[in-house]
Length: 105
Image 1 (spheres, one colour):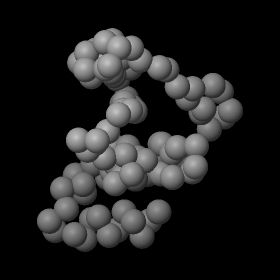
Image 2 (cartoon, one colour):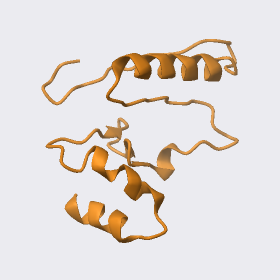
Image 3 (cartoon, helix red, strand yellow):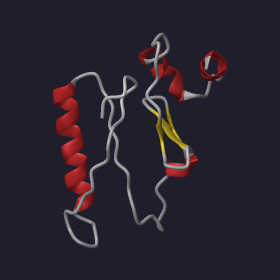
Image 4 (cartoon, helix red, strand yellow):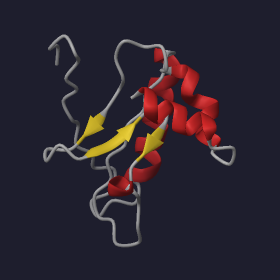
């Protein structure tokens, strides 16, 4: 992981380096991957090509990470409400289980 961080720091055109400090010294990293173990996101640093929205997208996974729980929930609820208005069956969403490093769900 240190090599990845250094690569982002050294790339002068890369705007991601402004966010590296958020998790660089953390003993753990937030990683979101699908049921096939494909990494979808390493928030707040990078999102993957695998999870990019396209005109043909039918299902959207909305995730949010943050250090202020109140602001995070408000932001997440707003995004969910806005996106779900475009669902085939309006305002229909499905929750996911979050598995924490200590095994909590």
